[in-house]
Amino acid sequence: MFDSANVHLKGIGASKGYAIGTISVRKHPDFDVNDYVTESPEREKEKFEKAISVSVRQLIQLKKRTEIEIGSEEAEIFESHKMILEDPEFSSPVIEKIENDKMGAYKAVEEVIDMFSGLFRAMDNEYMRERAADFEDVGARIKRRLMGIEEDAAQEMADNTIVVAHDLTPSDTATLDKSKVIAFLTDVGGFTSHSSIMARSLGIPAVVGMGKISELAKDNMAVIVDGVEGKVIMNPSEELITSYKVKKADYDVGKDKMKALAKEKAVTASGREITVAANIGSVSDVDDALANGAEAIGLFRTEFLFMESDTMPSEDAKFEAYKTVVEKMAGKSVLIRTLDIGGDKELPYLKQEKEDNPFLGLRAVRLCLKEHELFKMQLRAILRASAFGKIQIMFPMIGAVSELMEAKKMLDECKQELRSKGIDFDEDIEVGMMIEIPAAAVAADSFAKHVDFFSIGTNDLIQYTLAIDRMNPAVSYLYDPMHESVLKLIKMTIDAAHANGIWCGMCGEMAADPQAIPFLVEMGIDELSMSAASIPEAKGIIRRLS
Ligand code: PEP
Ligand code: MG
Image (cartoon, rainbow, N blue to C red; front, side, top):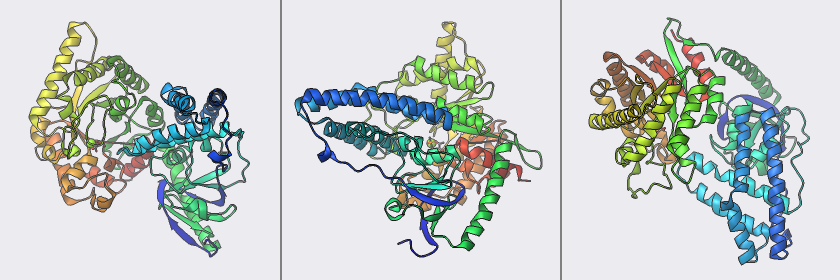
């Protein structure tokens, strides 16, 4: 199928950049349950336990190797794989199947892994869905051990290799020779899949979601990868190769310049400085934020800490996480958003009524104002952490002034509790709100009198303004950040903030949109907060503005 020259294929450009090289198709060894010899339950248990202990040892090695070759944050994935293997929630059902159903260890592992990965795959949240791949990776590792297949030696590769795979698991990427691999192409995956994240960390282009590329492509085929447009050209002609070499050289020079300047401030030609901040979801994101030149944390989404465990994290656990972030930021401000659960995010330990329209339901601050102890526990943790650096508190999904006043009243009660116990906190802590409901944007002037700042959450503001579900691909073509009504609401919000002497930032995806940044700066935005990887480019765009 790729015999003719210049065969163009489309996918999702998950990591920008260009690569020109030859393909190496990565396939996993073919084996199935019928190749496995089942013995007595005692023997099967022994084999399973041995497979676990060998795998745990391998994962410790892979973590070390990844720490050196890529970074400590990327290496953390192997810690979570190790935790899965050591968790009785995984091993007990396997042992039960071996003992009670006389099942072979291989099949028992397969069934338990399928059950866990099925649970994650069914989740609404893309990030959680992608975690199914971690269970599958762990399962495949154990199964290889049970089949007696040795592995994890780095693969021999030629220079300029473009790795093609159905999907690249963390274990796959850890064993690739990073000095030879210049791009990834995968059949499946999205922007947050492991292969995409790794490609961005390695600074190499990736095009994912390509359908059947791993079946159709053959080793040693010549290929051009265009991660900017999400395009792949098989068997490219000499002319095309030459033109892409020029594109690649320009892109690489621009990228090097951007990186070198990432830590410098973003000032327009006329001297206006825009704060460029990072959005984070956990403590482990901070290093990346700083490395990319974040001048602040403009949005700390706190729900992930709540979603990661089966039980409610304690006030101390939250306090420790917030304190670590603020200490790592060493004097730079950290904007902590209170819990935004509901909508597409659920907590397994919090009983919530099923809602017909969860995005219009008991979400975020609405839920917190019902669940007083849950809310206050978080507010106390944030206040306590504010004694260790500059923290700002932000309430999400505020639609009425009465909600804001109630949330602030609860914050005052928490301050009073801490004062009476002699616990330190920042008495001048800034309090702000997200503007993500159109009603709040329209009435921004009334809200501005009661807060120290606004941050515009365009992900929701756009979905509520245009009545477009932000998660629904069938209507995504109508999800338009540059829609006149969205721009008007943004302008009204910024103007109301400034008329009342407060600052206004933006933390939705639009803040990193190269097309939108010039308009936002023109409208007077004070801060743009985005994923760490977008910061160098955003700063570069701001510097080119008049
Ligand atoms: C937003 O709505 O723009 C936002 C930043 O919040 P989230 O994406 O977490 O809803
Ligand atoms: Mg939101």
